[in-house]
Length: 347
Image (cartoon, rainbow, N blue to C red; front, side, top):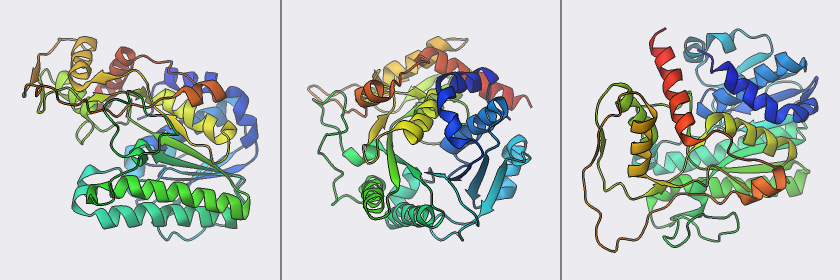
């Protein structure tokens, strides 16, 4: 089903002046059927209708039939077309494209743990293939959805990690495959930008909440919303002390479109919320925002003098250079996410 009209209006309200750049143009998107991609498709389709842009989007997918079942309203649109292929070796579609968004990423902790080489190869080869196509189709602007994982483990005394932080994943740890893959992907963008003149834009994405977020995988806030909606206690397996932050998905869409259209080339922007919460505070926020007020159970007690674990971005670069902000606050974001999933369950 579609996301909320109010959310689509929210995205358009904050991006309206940017869309003329796509008027009568074609844009190619990888990863268009995932969480990020669905928001990009929905907001593109809404802007195309409301502003009469006459634009077209071509979306790379491995399984069109599965997407047609999930989002028939998008699959039936005349301005959204699908190209079947694997991001690592897809056949280039014909014609010219003015913009390309590379949002295909296997952000799976299970794959990262069990098949780190596959994770690394898919991330790097997919980016190289997308960049090769950008050169082939004469795309002017290229957006890579990178990750805060490029910074490695955030030091406990750094409350908000900035873009110029020089840390990196631990190369001796196979679980660094995802973060290292994103680092190489960013480097490839810089190389292709220098060699071919592509305006490469980089969005280092952190954590998010909103419609289309799966509630049954490794995203803590999604699991908490699932349990609260079912009337069950929210059980935290750890001690609840790690810090996270969550940007609402409609704001995410605003940030990604703005970085594509207006971001400075080869200048990474952190994308996320700087309003940090511990995991326990996140669980209590979910319980307080949704009807019922389910109990929150923290399984472990914090160890004395334990260093803080953090995954929280500094976002002043995006705010100051691109006038971006966090418009939807966390309680409202939780309610909107739950409302969307409830509507979906009732269909």
